[in-house]
Length: 310
Image (tube, rainbow, N blue to C red):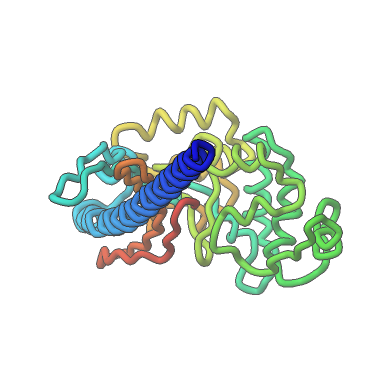
């Protein structure tokens, strides 16, 4: 009888332990499901807040176009967006970010003209930009081959499909203009460090665009002409402070090659990029939106939107 009672007691203890283990597992799974649901909800809310900020940016750019004839770094749009609270009945968080003039950068799509041929003036400008950044100018050859429609390698440092199909994993050239500058990371000779150095100074915009010298970086200003060395570029940065260049034609005519002087630089911009970062609870969302502003009317339209990456 004692033995039977002992077995019954042990059985009861095992059942209690098993039931407790199952209950704990169910509680844990339920907590994970709730947490997962809340994260998804917060992510959707963060995306909506980020997209909503586009309307505010469009208003700023439209008003700027109607009020001023030039674009420079002392205007309202060039000010970083401070951390603004998101405080509603269901959502608490913050949003911050910045708006950048993409025409203050070199447009890699300028390398190829409308006929699919390499534009020599912009090709040489890209080489100068690479050199100013301490990078290998030979990357310009491979970049031009990535964009042009043929499979003929540029001499001496070009790269077409025979090069890339030998990589692991294998891939092919675009053979067309690119829509996202991150694609440049796939070009032969472009390692990660080089790409990170180059990224703040280049962009990928539709068609051929001019450099806005009022917003261009030091190295982009250097790239405008072979006669613009580091000290000259630093002097140009000083001259444009307080509202941009007063006379860009007179300032750059002696410094820039005639091919670039005609359409290679300007003092206004059509393309801007918003980087909006939204933080809700532990969820963080980054939205990158490219806007095109029509000259004259000031109408602003989002043309490219991406989450988490440029």
